[in-house]
Amino acid sequence: MNLDALSYPFPSKRTVVFAKNGMVATSQYLAAQSGLDILKAGGNAIDAAIAAAACLTVVEPSSNGIGGDAFSLVWVKGNLYGLNSSGPSPQSISLKAVRRQGFKEMPSYGFTPVTVPGVPAAWAELSARFGRLPLSEVLKPAIFHAQAGYPVSPIVSNNWALAFKNYSKVLKGKEFASWFFTFAPLGRAPHAGEIVQLLDHAATLQEIGDTKGESFYRGPLAEKICQFSQSFGGYLQADDLAAYKAEWVQPIKVAYRDYEVWEIPPNGHGLVALMALNILNGLQLKEQNPIDAYHKQIEAIKIAFADGQKYIADPKNMTVRVSDLLSESYSLERRKLIGDAAILPEAGRPDSGGTVYLATADKEGNMVSYIQSNYMGFGSGLVVPGTGISLHNRGKNFSLDPFHMNRLEAGKKPYHTIIPGFLTKDNKALGPFGVMGAFMQPQGHVQLLVNMIDYNLNPQAALDAPRWQWKEGKSIELEPGFPMYMAEALMQKGHIVNLSLETGSFGRGQVIIRQENGTFAGGTEGRADSAIAAW
Image (cartoon, rainbow, N blue to C red; front, side, top):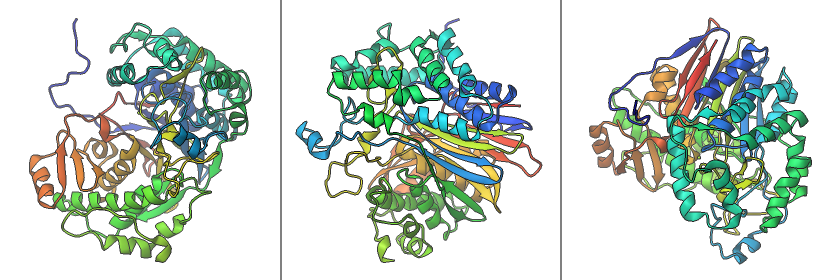
């Protein structure tokens, strides 16, 4: 049968999923099933999250990889823990050195934007502190799919093809040959349903599991990474990897309506979502007047991003306190900027007043909000030969402005776009949520929460709602399915409206909510190959 896996001419509907013993929600069904297999084998929600995350590096390499970064929020025994497993820039890099290369802004590809990868450290740290099964056991499903091969899912195949088309144009040096060898051995991206084996991934995952991540930072895998970097004049060196350790951090929160919304603190930009929610908390979002509600959300996001993009950086380098940015007095001042017409956002003065997301839960009450990414799809275009490790390009977000808070410096973490979210009420866990997609992520968080909290939509309906995306200035994009009369009304308020023909840039989310009777209600993203595995 000659079927088209990317053609869906008729509308369809997903319903919210319920489970009693456990739930895994991810952007790819084999990864969700892998997490559930680990739950059934005696693992907990933390083990399931690691298993699903590792599997995603195999079955959705177009969005993440072993050489990326990760963040996580973990609910265990009534407490919420935050893990920042993003890596710093190499010690040998400098703003002057990059400018001497002829760059006026950080490049997207090659070794210059490569920072220390944090994904393997995240798996090892989560496993050591909260996991029940050995890491080597938890990585077995991912290793199996890499060795035996798996049929490529539709959205992944499309994103893979887009990456191949782009990389064929922009990746010209010999250092990029391993990417094509690993991910396009037939001279093209794989088609939907085509079987793909990633044997180098399997061997690397096995070594990470057997050594609890040590090999990646202080062993044979580290040696291969550094040898590759040195061969092509990269900045990443052995000392950078050896010194790295994932960092446990205190999550930050705001009260929104009767709920508490939690995010990872900077260098992540979950702070942008919290600032926007703080602004909206003093405004009415009436369901009977959706134009007004959309307008207020867009304006709040614009204002929050103006502050975030000026002030968010490695926390060691920030001169503005998170508490000041989230203070009620500052939110009040920023809220006053919202009127009936679209504005051009500018940062305030608080001192004067390519990603995958997954959620897991188990019957003991443990819950995980987890996100990992290579950034911009496959990342830097570099794959360490013989390992399957695609190096990310998170350094792309550094500024080369010597006066910017997020300026490039040695040993510094960049402004980071990946953010896991968590929702509580009255100090009780409701559950993990997230919307992947670079600078769409805080916008997706706000829209998802407004849908669930203000409009009482179930997790699936909240994810299904049409989304908007602020781009810059007064410009916004509306995804397909957004009513035309709303687009016209937003234009009348001064917004520059563009109608998108695709949904890929509007984020992909997962939600798990624990109900009062102890069951889980889950929603999964219709814009991806998403699935919920329930038990």
